[in-house]
Amino acid sequence: MSDKTTTPQGIPAHVAIIMDGNGRWAQARGLDRSAGHVEGVATVRRITEEASAMGLRFLTLYTFSTENWNRPKEEVDALMHLIVTAIERETPDLIKNNVRLTSIGDLGRMPEFAAERLRKCMEQTSHCDGLTLVLALSYSARWEIIRAARRLAADAAEGKIAPADIDDELFAANLSTADMPDPDLLIRTGGDMRVSNFLLYQIAYSELIFTTTYWPDYSREEFRRDVASFGNRQRRFGLTGEQVQATNTAEDSKA
Image: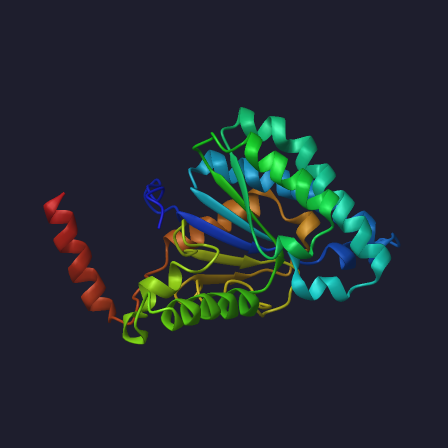
């Protein structure tokens, strides 16, 4: 786990977003679906800027799922080129704004030209210690969980660990997100109310927000409202509201 969890009061340390609605945004305007993806890149930029300005420590964007490989080849090829071209274009500004770029997912399935260019951009921002922008690329929560289970099974078979050693902490340490806190808030744009195989283990206690706004139309103002909504929620983690209030009061008295 990372120690980059200090944020302003009421602000989540980690926000994850399912960026949905690019294709439908374009189709509603009589445009090719690729036009929606291009417009969605502009939204990524403004939401990243806003997240950095608000003091978030991690912003994870569901950029390309393993299921997306099943889309028409023309759309997949266009997406791969768009993603890496946009990343390369934005890298100087990421560095300027002290934003570190990283990724989670099965990059081995990505075309080599895309994976190599992505690694270069991540290396160029590796010294930044402000917001960490995490792109979930070729990502699937089930793939991630199965991979972690296989790693632990191999360690157990080699005698490095005993099955009884496997707990929440050890399992989480074998996930792609081992160096970051679990998302405090998950936002999905586009109107669908599902999590679509995204960070299934990590969002066990995340607050959820679903908006009908298509991703290209998702504004700084709506993002700020969604983050403000998080600050007004009581996170109980299985406790009663009274228990949470008593704990908060005790912690405040120690401060």
